[in-house]
Image (cartoon, rainbow, N blue to C red; front, side, top):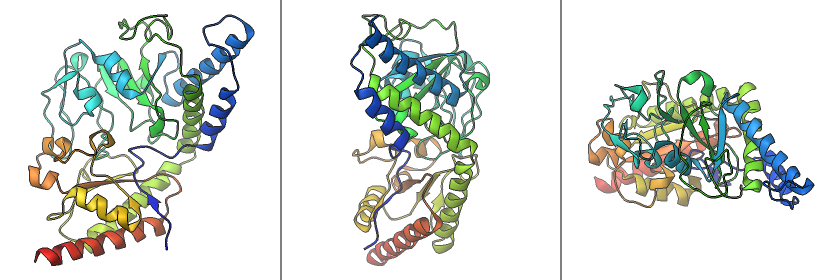
Length: 348
């Protein structure tokens, strides 16, 4: 029996060995990072090293890196109370704080009217579509793009950027907000004044150490061209599926996309049924954002792109990463097309 194949990297990437080693080392540190004695200073040094690692990988040297419990908390810190506009393709963590009024075209690209009052993601988690960020943007969710494509926060023109560790091989439960230095932002969690007064509470030392190590390793992979290789494998998968089954729709393939992401619509086959069928066949895929999984409803992202509710409910996302090879994706393509053929035969 063939081994299971994990094809849901946009939900969470496998933990990198560098992150695991950094976390194990941090577990041996007894000090509180806010303490002034030697043990506290040793813990604080780990956090500051991780801050520098994340900043370097994000191209945010000179910006403030505020560690949080994840991109969701970073979104709340960056967006709460600001009356921002956004599009319906935003992740729920950002959409919860802004008005989804911006137009979206059929390829998932957003038109921005006033960057200074707008939140706009750099890349979409479901379709992989990459946005062109306008200068002076208030907030950008960079979570899915971070570690997969070349980017520099300092050059993208946004005032604030959200990232999360577990999307690039770090631990779950830790993220960061990158802020252009000098940005005035009120703390949402108040208390001891940690994280430059922007996020109180004793820092998650172990998670932050893992985040820093993962960010540094991700930057090395990106520089070495590993995600260019991933794009080639994704394209092989896309070509195989389109060649085998003419009915399917490849979403957003007319736009720039993340190198690892493929969203396909299979008419007549509900997304959640596809996910279950592939799970039983030994493949992990998803029917949309992991934060919306378990909710039987059509993708609002695809709805914003002009797909009706029936089509939007027939989509799955396949997201891969380094180490996934041509044989792997062709095995998936064969299994998926056979299952789709059986579904159509039963419906006939």
